[in-house]
Length: 92
Image 1 (cartoon, rainbow, N blue to C red):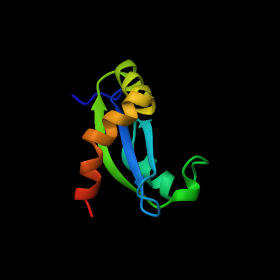
Image 2: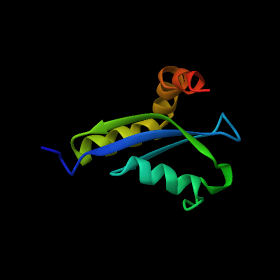
Image 3: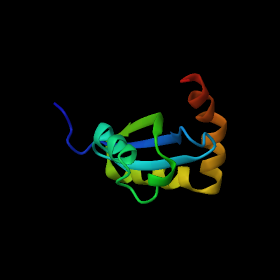
Image 4: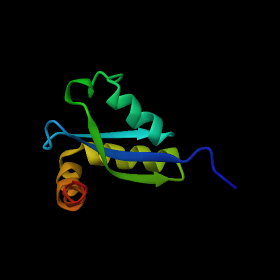
């Protein structure tokens, strides 16, 4: 049985500026990435197009929100750079 409450924390990397990343939370990953690349997000429009680096699905909103906030914090950015950044270079 599919859980409609599943939330995805995702990390995008700008194709124009590979050092620029964006962390977000969504219930529909494909639609959200398309939205970023269509320029519909004020925070990401200037650095489009974006490539998905990693997506992690959570079964509860609370867990997803905690992880998203962690990735947006100083120590979370260090974690992402150390553990998720290598994934970004493998996609090229």
